[in-house]
Image (cartoon, rainbow, N blue to C red; front, side, top):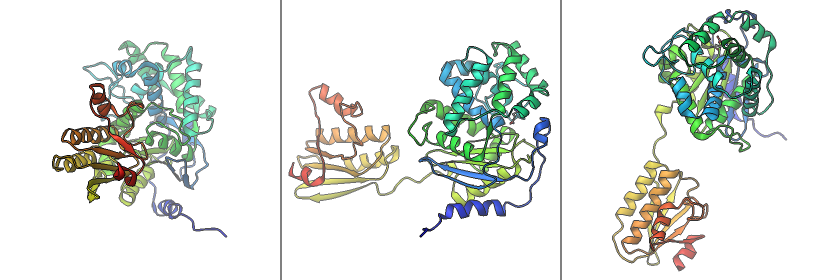
Length: 430
Ligand SMILES: NC(=O)CC[C@H](N)C(=O)O
């Protein structure tokens, strides 16, 4: 017997069926792209634990093009450090087309790594003994992100390189400005190879899901350092859609990156990676139906980051039991939940009543939430309470693992280490 099919599959199929008339033209400045079938249409959604939902032409390969830019930027930062990369490439939205021949008149740098000027500069910052070694390292990274080895579409590469005058002009301009070390011809060749990596929507959705997971693959492999990942997503949010970045951020509201072959990848941090493929492009060089699909998904799925998740309104419950006060805390804790816990702790009258802090229903707390709760516990203790912690999931950490820093600080001064119990019953027995 076969069980139900998840409605997610029905939903993404429905999206493709109802997307409506296409408009725009396929990119033609790269001769090989002009030959693409303009009616292809595909979508993929990848969850952080590795589930991938697909519909349409999901196994059709196309070239990654500019969707490569955020990943190469990540590698440049990993290789050189953020400071060095920022000395070469700004992070300001340009409002220009992707191939604009421009540097910031004040800083003399490319305005951001998502337009070609900045992407060529990022490519040159990737380490490698020679041009081919650089490309190899880039391919290797993309493969780890996609979860399978990727290859270069040689026909598209040759085709673009034969018409790469504009990118050559950009590379020479960068060298004159002192932002490009190395031979412009080699760099443009390498950059063009990077853009010619062949992918499917499945691959792109999986790559997006790694960005959504803070740089970690579903297998737990930290491919991109979380600070670097944050930098990449921020730049995608402000610059990923070129001169329609503002329109995109207001109407869809997630970091994204488009490519001239018709791919479009969006990242909802902490939740999902999404990719669509439809080759006809709008005036900004972004997939026309791709943009429409994301606008629709934003409405249906509530993607928009600025619509922000609401703070949980019932983070804790205070119960008096057997002469003790029990604070049952629940849900994932961030700054605002930590603040609510502290506010409730602050209402606790001073005295020697045992206070039990029950974290059995908390599975995650970020750094500030953990420090807030620990500091609240320390202060309850200073007020005279015998505080007992029930923390079966290790949310607060321990002095030994280095995450119980405030408690440990007190301990170092001959102060307080709260007692820890496996459950409320044993905490009550003290
Ligand atoms: N927007 C894009 O996808 C541009 C990438 C393309 N390889 C170029 O450099 O022109």
